[in-house]
Length: 466
Image (cartoon, rainbow, N blue to C red; front, side, top):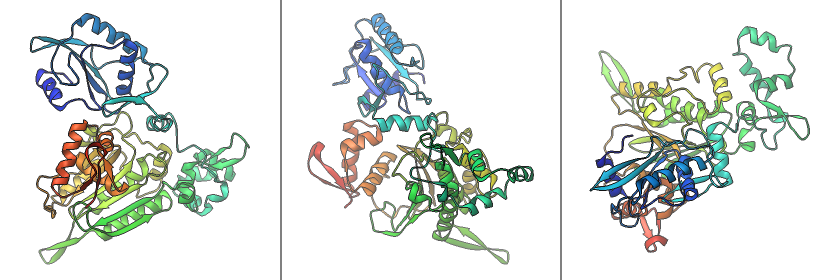
């Protein structure tokens, strides 16, 4: 984006965050390379402003603009692979003082390093990525494939021959005739459902093989489940009215979750002519589609994280582990122009082969939007904050009197408290990317409105449900 003076002043007002950093002058090129690397490895990229006092946010100007630009260009070459700013660094005059702006573009799937370390920006700090974060980045970019990895502890006995045979009935006639002369092992290897163990040479199931055809997939892949929770209010403060954990193959997860949602929504009606026409609270086709998308596109490499469906009196939220794949943005989704880039292409192909699951390739988001509009409901909301969330609203007014609505960051904080029991301001900063000052202000706002309670003081305080 073009950094105009109003945008610069707004950045100064908001302060440093996970996407914005202030510098009076450029540090040594090696240190600057680490800062740029941290932003380059983030989903959002970032902006570094030179000529700003980071403690006071005062505009002091850059003392030697040309030398600063040279340092910036040297730093870009110290990042491996070389990081390319969104535009060449240039001098901008604000209040008669020269500032230099560097924009680091959002990560496109590349993993960057500087000084031999993979860096990431969290909050207002740049820190080394953990091995888990490096692995997660590689899985997100597709450099590592969860689907074709050998399933831990699994053997071919964990696969159900009946489920495999049922799937094969949907293959084209020519394909079925060819498969008649193929051994079971060769068939599984060809489908990507098995691979040879490099240590023993035996054929063993892959993760996608267990997810599609496993007898009890959740025993080998405990993250492959869906947690459903229905609350009696808008914020999940009251005790839940229903809680279920759904397990099974990919097909069973989709069918069970879709049926559960269909049973849980209210269905009204109106008389048209001499007939009663059902008016469901939400379009069941849209709900099924969002479940299909979650099961197909979630990041299964995130061990211990399940798909979660939260049903409130005014909305349904579907939380899918993992973020959007590189090259797909929230803006694309909202504009109904997102390219079809499945995170799990083998699983997606299986579901395309079976009628009733992925027949609308590339048109699932459009279907959700159209189905909601047909019932006169708001378009689905798409949010990306450490996971991908789709929200369907039924148009009801809030039943909880909390003043102004909670913003997306506060809702995320509330969700963390619900799932983990409590939250600190530092954890809020890491989850939302805001500054410490903004985090404390938004948490204090929730306390004053009675949504959460606080125990302790200042930065050591923890926040809980009332």
